[in-house]
Image (cartoon, rainbow, N blue to C red; front, side, top):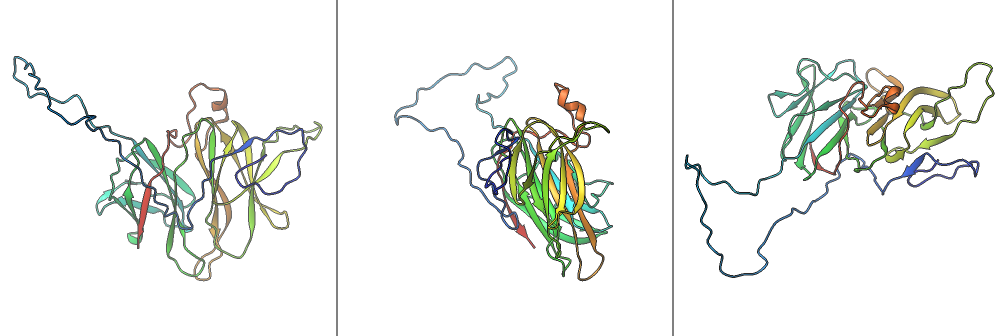
Length: 305
């Protein structure tokens, strides 16, 4: 197993890696990475006189239309609520458009929104009617894209929020973004390993395993995996499954808070989206709780407090 900026691990030389490094992708501390895109434009190859062309009009004398039309891109917003609280999160675009409708987004859950976004949109996050934070989009890519946005707690002392944002590269393989939103003194690492299908009485086989470095993105071969959260002493804190499909993008989050004021929440693992393992053998895979991810590009965002 190998991923971007691999840590030194010991492994059998005959084992083949199922994790492949992506081009360097590092998340900004608060997810406020802004990328600039150059727009395509047509210009005249030579200066000179333009020939006049007479257009034929229909019998209804409809106004002539140009043969160049603007492209419309699909920007799908994926929001994950990693803010530890028993009150679910409402998400608004602007002051009145409630994206979550009548179903606020609960803690440790993610959701895809198909609402068309434009540069300058502001996403308002509220809990129980109280303002939690605002995320402003400064620019959008000229590509179809899935925009990942994670809201979480800023620190263990205050109740302020922070954001992480990421856009996956357009690859044919599965991609996993690993994000640590836990706030507290406990240290744990996330590891990905082969799903053990050994039945009782079968000969035990070594399970391949590798650490998933926080604030990184790795490519994973299609298959069934388990993601485990382990303490520094090797004690298991959490375990969940990951069904990796081609051309899909995933987020693995460590959640929880050791609060210095208010309620504390234990360390847990969140994997999204969740697919049926049968999708590995299906020509048209469908997730259990979300739409499939599409080709992705980068976007810029500016946080407004």
